[in-house]
Image (cartoon, rainbow, N blue to C red; front, side, top):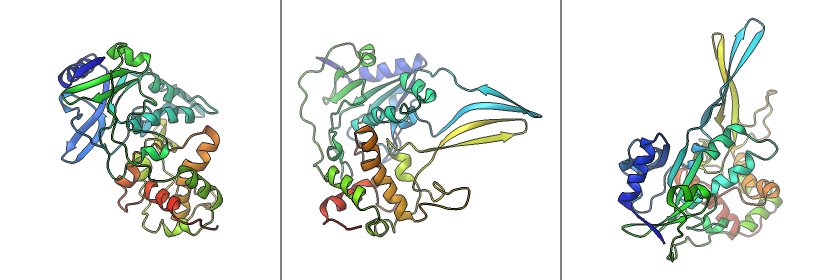
Length: 331
């Protein structure tokens, strides 16, 4: 059995920071608001009690804004300057299983018909230390999408809260490099949220009730802010733009969201999803039908960030529960 005290863990984190590694963990930036961000000092790492950060760790491997390459224009000639560089080693500490599982899902997206070198460089340079959940709130629903509070999917090492310290289980060679090969002893059952909806029923509804009035009726409160997608661990839509000042510029990849009115606007002016209800439908349809058809699993980890951060109280959980518990709706 491998154990580590909280103080010993912080000393490890301090050593990683001193060695030039980028260490990312939950930080309480103000009372009641915790986010994942790079740590400047080990003391800012928030691992006391159960808390749900407002963002996700996908930013570690899929940045919100990323320069793909730079260019210089000289008359009719364009010189490309490759911006690709080696990624510094980074360690994510204290991610919940619903965050960690997302990386294994994103791996498929960014290596489907094209291997995304930028994503893969960051992913290879990243070690994830997952903290098993000891509690949950009303928005958590990991058990409804096939996960649980101690799921190892995507983790390199697991931490289990033991009060004055943590039991440690190395899952991959990356985890062994940090903590050794020792396996944790007996782990107490984690408190799991009850199964709140039937994912198969939600998938069937998305497939068979594409034109149902349900979508528009349940999207009236949506303001199209994109908070659901931006804080979701697995949403991965992006736009690519060229920005130029004078003779030099760069091509950048920026996050985008299917809830934005301009997301599907064509150059002709036509928009195949002009109404917010259609955009809400697209989000659930993609997660429970399109992605499972292609990759065999749900594009959702049950973290609850969408509902937790939505100013209108929408999100996957409210919609999925209503679909799962309601009578079938005809298209």
